[in-house]
Amino acid sequence: MACKALDGQVAVPADDALKTLLDRYVCVRLVQMHGVDLKRFSFDGSLTWAIFMMNADGTIYGRYGSRSGLRDLSDREISLTGFKASLRGGLEMHGRYGQDKDAVGKALAGKTSSRTPKWRTPEAMPTLKDNARFNVPFLDESGVRAGCIHCHMVPANEIRSLRLTNQPIPDRELVPYPMPNQLGFRMDPKEMATVLNVGPRSVAGRAGLQKGDRIDAMAGQPILSTADIQWVLHNAGDPAVVEMRIVRGDEAKTLRLTLAKGWRMRLPDWRFINKGLLRQALGFNVDMVPRRRARRMGLGGKLALTVDKTSRETRMKTGLGNKDLIIAVDGKRGPMTVGAFTAYVLREKKKGDKLTVRIMELVDRFPRPEHDVEVTIK
Image (cartoon, rainbow, N blue to C red):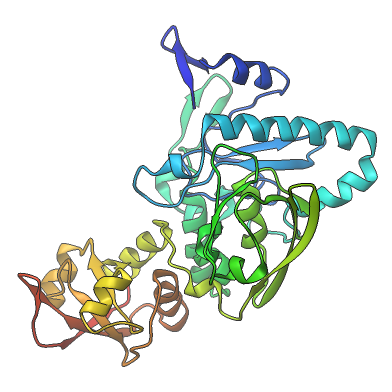
């Protein structure tokens, strides 16, 4: 972000104010995930990059880096101005931590996961450990190392490994790091933890959140960025009430976000994690049909998923094609998000099982008669 190449090799900040701020940090860049401690360094693997602001003793002050879609919409969530504001917040937190380590450390404890992951490092996951692609040795100045593991491979292979070893797959792994806008509020990318707008009838609107509010803390954790909010929501229960301490003008208030049972699986998630898992298990992935389009087709409040990226093998065996609409799964017609559909496939089905999907084909935008297609789980 706002960097330029130096002699074609090293990226340095092009913004003087950013360089001044970063000079007050010890900056470390990780470009692959081998050996990374997944308990301490928990983050959204779908991001292009993620920032941890932390103390040398491992205490995390905050995170930075958010994304709300696969298209290039990053300026809706992050900005150079907002990044600098969060960096200043991290430095202020560092000063407070130095003055009262016990009290501030207690508030920051929740920024490190309380759960011990099934596999502490990526290469310990069965689907990576036994994958020859990541065990082809190459030499560097420090000796032999395994092939590169990218950030986005971690969440997908954690789910694959859980499935391979017949362990439960938590909802939070299938619909991770919810964006605030999925609960009805959007953060200002140019400010530190400041609300840009709120949907009046949304979860956030009903809690009393307003435009211009600065979110000081959530679930007792100091908030420096949208990524910090996502971290709190990622670890929230089901159902849950998440307390928010906000500053409105000169007044501090406590608000409560009420998350109803099943809230996470109702969120329309954008990540490619589920799409990769579905393509591996079914030979195709899916997208949600936009609500307005679904209503126009008489599918409002019902299951409406668009088939995408169908493999040649699946097309040949089933006749299923890209842009076909799935309107029922094993006879179920209730609405499903991509995450909920993935959960159904991975939790309810095993290799060799059959999945019956009812299809509505479109020809020149007009639907043809419905018919069932049977897909074998891989």
